[in-house]
Length: 447
Image (cartoon, rainbow, N blue to C red; front, side, top):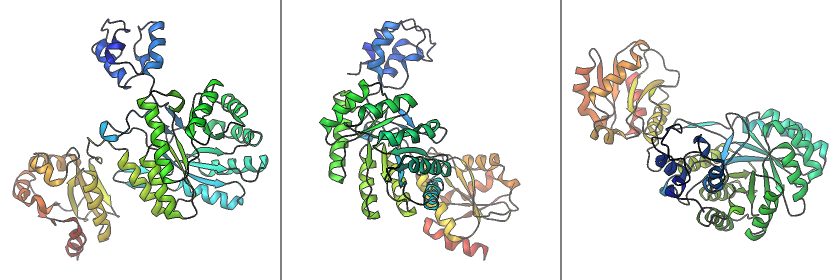
């Protein structure tokens, strides 16, 4: 069981040296108890205390990365069952399954779908994170060739080697070992061979077993063989079973401190019916999956799953925000209209979408109001004439446009007079009160 801050404090040097970055040893202990800092940050702790604290301070769910580089996906490390208690930290990875018996052209096409799957939503880049290459040919050379081809066509995606034959998978692991692929998966029958491959190449290993008792027993066996980075697959396929098993796994790890189930979870939700697959994937994303394997990645499905994942893995106590700056929407020119709004993500998403719908190239100045909507920010004194004027002047936008006209939201029309006083030489135009009126407003303006 995790130690309390006071219990940890008793094992620290108590010198208040500040070398760890905290003002006191007690403050460091409290942060360590919340899994907010690593024990290695204390340079003076004794080896005995470090050993005692090592296991106690380790996260209940093991943390490691799927893939390498900037696009690697961090998994595990969650600390709560419900996001309102704190937040969920590491969004699950979405993976496209590709079978190795496809032609080279089809393999390349599917891998390219993954490479080109990125979307921009409310200021965040969202994408399919991984490719799962499934061995259906039972041919080692064919599988290795397919893995190399897919890896080359999707160079930033994490790789999942979906094969249960140790004699087939080893060559594929060796071929892409530098990408730290996930071996999927070890079973009770091939556990020794798969664990040996995972250890030899230093890659994570997924384990598959029917039911949680069998899964935890296999987990203990694999860990005993020296594999540290493990992913759990309890073999469930239906939404009901995914909900039940994933919840039991998370609860066992967090509430009971049951280490054999303290690992990230993978759910293979592939279906012939794409809509049904999206629904099952939604359950897995909402209920603790760290990896979800899909059979197809149509854009409509991607957007739905990206949006769900993005919403679940935001901090419920902090409004979603976009970066403060002036955004070009369309091919904005010097005479294009200039509008302004706040940096609440939903506000930005709706307003920018309506500007796009208008087909009128424009600029949208997004002002940092701590993630508040227009009316809320105005009421809080964050979206007022003096601050808007300072933002516009500091942005340097006047050097990019041939006019000095700023369109403000109709909901804060009261600011127009004060803004004209603060922004000398500027014309302040009151725009629509509702975002859905923006297209008509802009079309009439440039007509």
